[in-house]
Length: 324
Image (tube, rainbow, N blue to C red; front, side):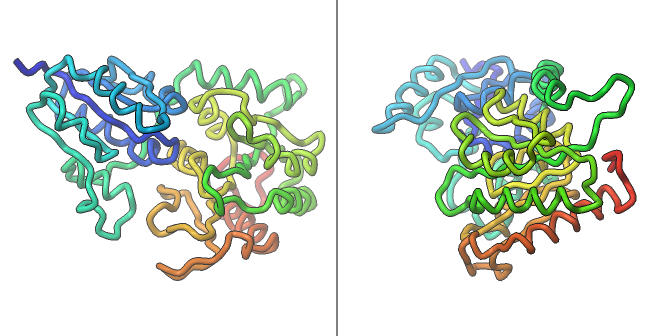
């Protein structure tokens, strides 16, 4: 007998999980009241702890020799599912009992942004825009790291913050670390950013790429590198006025959190993986589709001007309080 439960096999990476985050809300719309089990990775598990309709989270990290797949199968084989949604395109949905299966495959890739791919997979009648479920716990954890570093005097407004993510997991996606330091120096001297603070964000082990930016920021720096889980990082980014980062998971998190976002791209498909949302900008080393250039081709001048454009579009030249 099929149970009234849904299995959602989410992407394992932060960026892909953010892009596919609209799936949860859509499942609730298509199957009201049906509880959802999410299979995800350890780093992305926090995304789902406050997501509507999610009753169980199964964190399974990728392992050598693909041994994570048998582990996943063992966790879900005992249930006969109403629906299985698999964004990874694995064989798991066909090795368990399910009334209906919606499984990603290459046929969904038609040259559209990945949000449209996820929308087609779910058979939705509207784009499944990324959506984060940032809870009070995440906001409290972020504030516990940020507020002591701000040291704002009592009664004084919190200064605006520009979040910087100088890291990317894949080789070739990271703008050189020393240029992030040069960018901060330029921004510190720019009147638009008078009084602003510079917050480096990243995961555990991202200290080295962030070091030049924090060194350049000096006492105006905020270190949020490896300081919390992904939802706390999302809360920290959401509290910022602007965000600038490499093509990375945190770039997608920022866009989904609604923070005005500038994404830097080198030899990757910016037209498919650019930040999604109305308050986003993409700066690519080569702006021609299907043409590529090293991210090192982006100069400090180019990125600086793009940051000014982001500021002027969403903050305004005369603003000093960070209000968008």
